Image (cartoon, rainbow, N blue to C red; front, side, top):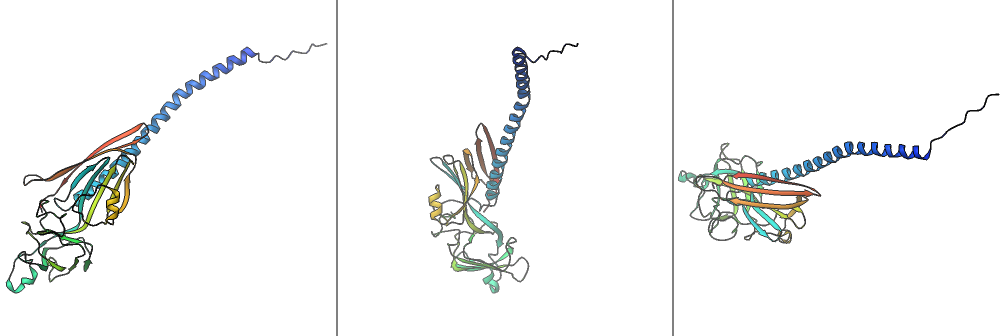
Length: 289
């Protein structure tokens, strides 16, 4: 008679050894998998922060490069860093002399005038153009007596608010007819006979307390630079968030001279948890009025 074979199971000691070895294997696998995954996630977060900061600075630099010459100004109020400019839509060259028979075609600086002809046309507007929210500016050099922010004063370099500005085709491709009502006396002529069509002011407020960089536009020109959202909103501004997670910013503007152009230096810091990036952008600005 054959004796049955005994069934032998796993002892408790063997089970503990298997569990211990499995834990060691899992621990080693975790070391080799989790660390690369964490590194990838941190790199992704830094890349996202860098992209956000780069996009914000590019937008700001683009606005600055299209600013009316000598209209950039900066200010700081508590945790708010502000930079403002007067945005231009287009530029042309005006006619300020010519045959007496065509005196209506040239701009008179000795008295209030209501229009002129261009010698180099506006090229970024669709004709016929008409607006009551735009401005015409000539020879803004940003000092007392020639400061576009002193709108409504005398002397002045920019047409008053609510002036009706029209641009129509002239006898030639270059000779567009520009009119503005009511009539206005520009204080100074531009050495290069430049005239700018201005859409209005644009402000960027960087508030490190809220972590937001916000762009404001569509508000009235103010003599004193606005440094709060309440002031801008009260002036009729619309706003849009440009960047979040802002932990630091700095706006510096160096006016130009006859030997060099102006320069704006822009610094922006963004942080998301343990990740932080700092980007710097420099924009060279044409300052010849």
